[in-house]
Length: 105
Image 1 (cartoon, rainbow, N blue to C red):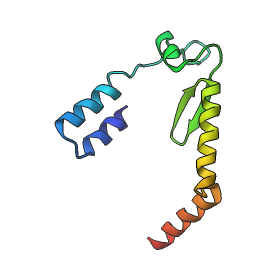
Image 2: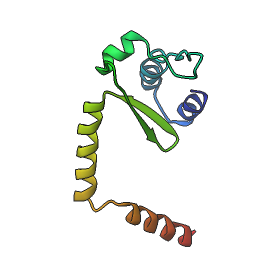
Image 3: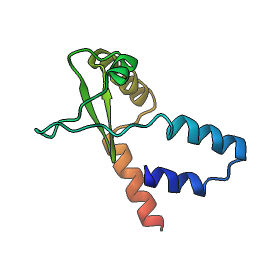
Image 4: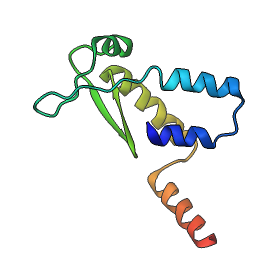
């Protein structure tokens, strides 16, 4: 959250835009409790909001993670894969583009 707040400070925003972002991001955030085994406990209101019942998909995303209802995640993953396929995005295309940028620097 500290990184997000620092990034927000760097953005060129109007007072109204900043207020909207601060309210929607920071006021809705919660610290998740951890049980003795080290598992996060997702509060009932967040589970209900996400449509999560007794199973959850833990999705790693580079430097962050997301918690999804498994069916919703599978649908989103299928959509993302199709968009990547249509646009020719693959691991090799990403690696090649990164190498080209590094060589140009």
